[in-house]
Image 1 (cartoon, helix red, strand yellow):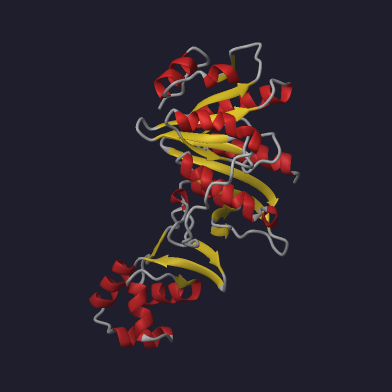
Image 2: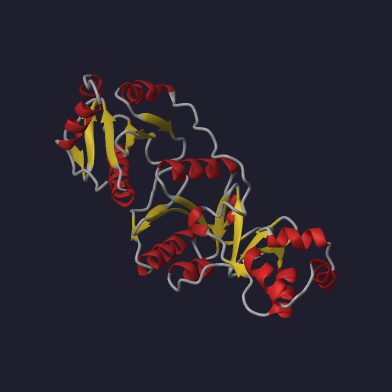
Length: 320
């Protein structure tokens, strides 16, 4: 299957699952292909045939954008270099959850969350420690007896009951011994924090020199500015005092700029974020819902209210 066909299939699946899906981010370089929203759940989705093409820089960018836009970064792919992705399993690349299309279909359309995740050494599950402890005590089994049945130490059994994850083999043995479901789903929509590497969100990159004058104005009027390197926009601005977010682009007013502004408008609708594109000289005031602002106008802005008034005249603000 070609990547274009795969992207079409995945976006159709998200729409069938009740998501509002953005336009495809047909720009280069790009960290994600589409954004999608269902209720309060927002995902930034990268779609790949071979997930080995997902590199560390892209993973870092997606994790940063997920944090700034209150979204979950997610990769949907078909295979690695060595094998097809297994159904019902969550993989990880550079701290980002990875699902096969079948797993994504089960999760988003059929509401069946994955129970298994891949990590170095094999496949694992989340053991519900409280349920395990209750089952063991109800059967009047000691830690030592259960450890002997599983072929592990008493300390390991105690760790299972305190929330340590277990291999597939151990989980199957526990369910044979005590019956019922002892596992809990992998929390994909929370970024699967409990099973991925617990490293912090990567720091923001430096702004490109040509973008510094524009981003400096946003910082001056009260926005916390987060530059990007692989997105259709140059930065995400956050006004923490008002919970406002702003997608910002900057270039000459060319056909490429219009294309980016349209993508930013679509992304803004999905993420409920305002979008502004700064140009040296403009022949129009907006592209869809992205406000077009000349650099001289921006430099005259005195504070965040002044900026909001300027943007309110152009495009349509997204629902906060």
